[in-house]
Length: 252
Image 1 (cartoon, one colour):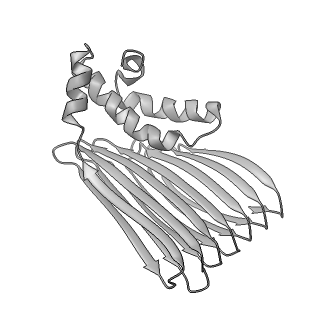
Image 2 (spheres, one colour):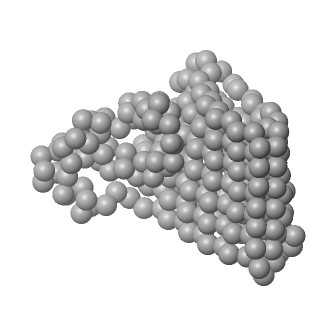
C-alpha cells in the first residue's frame, strides 16, 4: 500500500481467521512526503488458530503513522514490525495491547529505525497474561548517526493475572548519535491491592472488580482511538475476557 505526497488515510483491519487455521500475513506500507495514516488493527483469531504477520513501513519527510493494535484470541500470534522513519521529521505513534488467557502465546517484535533528522516516535504497550498464557513484547528503538534531533519515548507495562502466567517485556535502545532525546521504561506487576479493596468496598463483586482494573489498564491504549466506532469494536473484543467490567464501569 502506497500513500502519495500529502495523502490521508484511515484504515481499520480485523483479522479473525478460521478455527484451527494458520494465517501468514505480509503488509508493506510506504508513506510519501507529508502523508498521514491512522491505522487500527484488531487481531482476534478464532479458537485454536495461529496468526503470524510481518508489517513493514517506510515514512518519507513529514509523514505520520498512528497505529493502534489489540491482539487477543486464538492459540497464538507472532507479530514482527519493521518501521523506517526515512525522511526528516517523520513521526510514528505506536500503541498496542495484548490479552492472553488459557495457554495462549502472543509475541511481538517492533523495530523502529530513526534514520533522518527530527524523526520522532512514541510507543506504548499494555499486556495482561492470565491463567497459563504467555505474552512477550520487544520494542527496539534504533537511532542512526543521520538522525540528529531525533526523539523516542517508550513505555511498556504488563500485568501478571495468573499463577502460571508469563510476561516478557524488553525495551531496547540502539543509539548512534549524541543529539537525541530518548526515554524508556518497562514494568511487570500485579493488580493494585488498594484499588481492588476500594472497588470491593463499593459493593462490586470480586471478579467484576478485577475485570474493571484490567479494563482501565488496557484503556491507556484504547484512548488513542479517535473514532468512537473503532473504539466500540475494540471494547467489544475485550468485553468477553473481562466479565462484569462493562456493568461495573457505571458503579465505580
